[in-house]
Length: 471
Image (cartoon, rainbow, N blue to C red; front, side, top):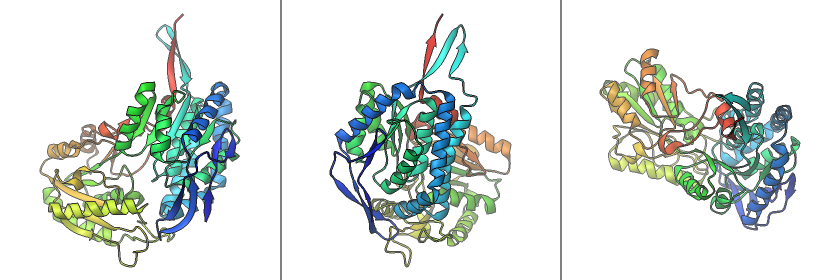
């Protein structure tokens, strides 16, 4: 049993002003593995005050000083990598491979920003003017539960590189992971008040962070619904926003693609992180003449996927993160059946022998139509919908017929053709014949999938305000 009963404010672990407690469950077996004390408005305001006080001096640090802090943060996370991996499996239910990758990615993010600072120009000449990129101020970081270390670190690294101080509010479902991460941050030895963290409910801490006049910027990863609430709350103080929100990503398999390669890749793209990823390619578009062959390859591919306890090295899909997630996915599977889609694999309920945790059957529907809920709404679980098209133009039109635009995928043996299709897709990222991630490239979405970008130079510039000096 772990007890999370301290916050990190002004360089110290402190007792919360709030007193509410919640239980922390292991999603693989629904056993209680810890408790956490939640903060209140006073805790959030104390953290903001500490970050504001630290900003004056931290914003004046040199590039070399900030590079050293970024190196220290990387080293401190690497020192705790085994602990982070273990609790990511235990608290979140991540597979071993995912837990190792995501926490290494978190550490490496700090090195990426250290390297970016080598060539980044905070002062530039624009026309006859001097342009100075100045730190914004206090940044509030609010993150989701499906990639805790990585989501916090990509925002924090950009803020540190830009000379900003932060207040972090992690997900209510990630307190043990966040505690280990926080202990690493403390070990890194940054000045007091630069990094602050407060645990608490989104509806308690969130409104304070998004409306407080001493917070200059919000970096949020989560649902579009919550993103809208944050945006409305922040407008009175004109906060700068980076909102990375929901997705319903299309994956177009062009009729010249090698299905034996493209379809297993498509299944992996949908089921990545046990299906709990905003970039999952959950809408698969195939030419109508390729549907039957696609179905057979999918059945074979899914039959080789292991759903199981996340501590097993060969598990591909672990438990869903919570009862709420389990119930949500069951709802959508039922919805697909009732709407008349053809369920070719999976179904309602838990896999045999896995009823103790929040396990679901990876499910694939064929003969899905555009108006079905499973084709339009973010499910956030291992559920794939197959839609068919007649022409390339129709495939593009169908792929873009969504309120989201976070990610998209294209498979083709003709790169010129694939690029032509990619150019017409309304998404922040389009991957051709791959599921690779580029940490240097900006990440974010079109339409309801967000505002702004994080990652790489774009993430750094989002922490800065351009100031023009005329002489």
